[in-house]
Length: 151
Image (cartoon, rainbow, N blue to C red; front, side):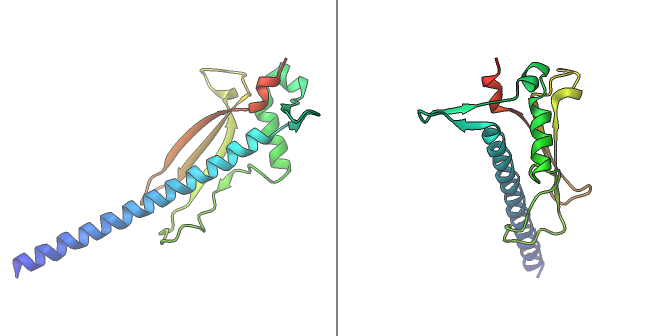
């Protein structure tokens, strides 16, 4: 009877660990998918096609000289209803999310002590709700693609 009880306990613990691992993987996949959408928005910003079919960028010269490409991009995309901070969409996760939500914030490096005044670099940060079963904290620094065309 003791062996049966211990075997059931081990099996239950194993199933719980497997379920938690599946949820963690699904949540990180949703974060990575959302980050790819952000990268896509960055790469498309101020992009155009030249007469000969080449991809070119036309960033505002004021944004280039003032090092504000990142903050200008964020402002413009927010006005379009894109890159708005808040909870990311977890509706495609096929398993129970157990009340977990993941918040995205998008800022620039301007307030950083390592690079004050540089608003060209965008910081995208993902965090799960406090006390979450699966703690998520991920940060990415992204450079605005159009910066390569600043003169």
